[in-house]
Image (cartoon, rainbow, N blue to C red):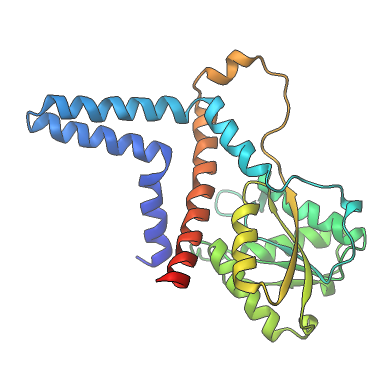
Length: 271
């Protein structure tokens, strides 16, 4: 089992539903050890966590807070840049029984990139991202994204593809290698438009700035905003549902990721 698989496994235990199951499991262990008071405490904590994480007032609020850090802007509001950099993610790979790549809500990042290119905001589009886990006969995600952009009018010679990275942090590391090896990026300082999901932007921007601050000037371009005004009655935000639980998982994932890279930076600088 490689490090990415280990991280994915540990993350499952720390996500909302995982924490609920951990509390339930610990409660069961204490129950069979005839410690009913401790068991009840864990079960109560698990119930509270399940209610909080599955309630829109929490999950929508947390997601909206993350997305508000980099609100989407009109394409015409961006000036000229040296490159458009698109973080990996957003496509469902053509694994059986699917016979073609499929779009998800997060694939809006590729549409935004194509619009920025069409508006003349940069001469190149850099697509980052391989596959988290290798599958026979399945190409890197960024290669399928390249095909999408070509279909949407971006010429192939304007697209640079990176195919090895499996995480957000690796996206940035591989982009750094591209800057060193690709003659298209020979300038000492590059102005780039960073494109990714609005909820993913805080972590992506932090990672890129902390690693490439002296090499790259970043302008964020957020895509696929999850929280929009719907006019739903207020009581609906207090009613637990599975959609809110899933949304809480996405938001917590981004928070964990941001805290983790900030902790690593702190340890590197001060310890």
